[in-house]
Image (tube, rainbow, N blue to C red; front, side, top):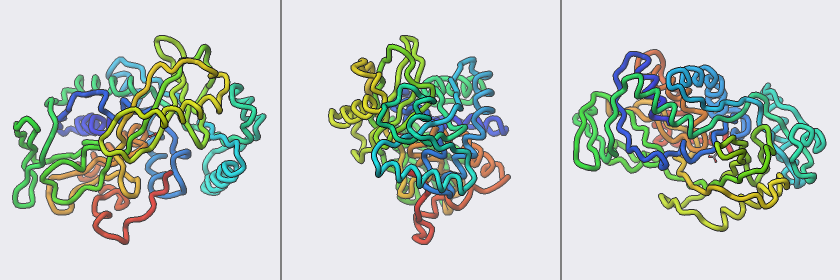
Length: 368
Ligand code: GLY
């Protein structure tokens, strides 16, 4: 999604991007995701991540309105909050700490005891002792979003080449284009590297790019009725209500595994997700699991995306490393990229690739 959102934004700004698209939709992190839009739930503390994520969320309603109008595809945006819950004493303390720093930083959150949390979401387990409602956070139907964006990009006239980039071509400190895996070459004065978890493996880059795949396993439970109104999490799982053509579902995510490019399902991770979901919402009982899948998030050492130009090779731009929040951050980072490429403003230093060569700049990102 990140690359397509950027192409759409660049085309809107009067540039003429060409997307090189591997075309395997199920490989995409956006396809595999759950579609949560939750800056206040994902951030660990105030800082650049939270700032970017909030600006991403702010952009979403207008982004979705334009996208739905351009594509004719509804993408199911709901901004009715996300409820974090705690059951164990330790988790309760962590949730209180999150409440405290979010309130101190001025964010709209509401603390609830277990009964209030169950009034909001009646299917929650009686063991839930507290909840923290993150107002204005929400969700989008990620697969419809992916389809809508592909349609909008095609309708806007952006050219697409099917294939996978294997290498960047540059000479004398200037980008010349890319080479594809099948040997074809494309010429371009500017190349934006937005290859998600595969970004670090592109050959010919002027520097090692520290982007690694972080595997996430997920599953979907078909639910006899609609047990949840909004995204609900425990420290073990997040649950996302979804209206599928076959009926209501609850998406359950997600593991975080350092497993290279392995995307296999793994029984222990799947069982932990299922147990976590059924503990938090006992009404799911033995409702059947209707889909299991995995995806690869593009992780970076400080969990922040990489957005901005290469400091040495002119014409090379990075737009990658969005880790757990590609869907949320895509419109915001597409905007940063567009402003950078059109000379309006440079992307903030916190997101630029130079931070990995300057140890002073490598620090915690402020996200969980
Ligand atoms: N956005 C949540 C995840 O990556 O699991």
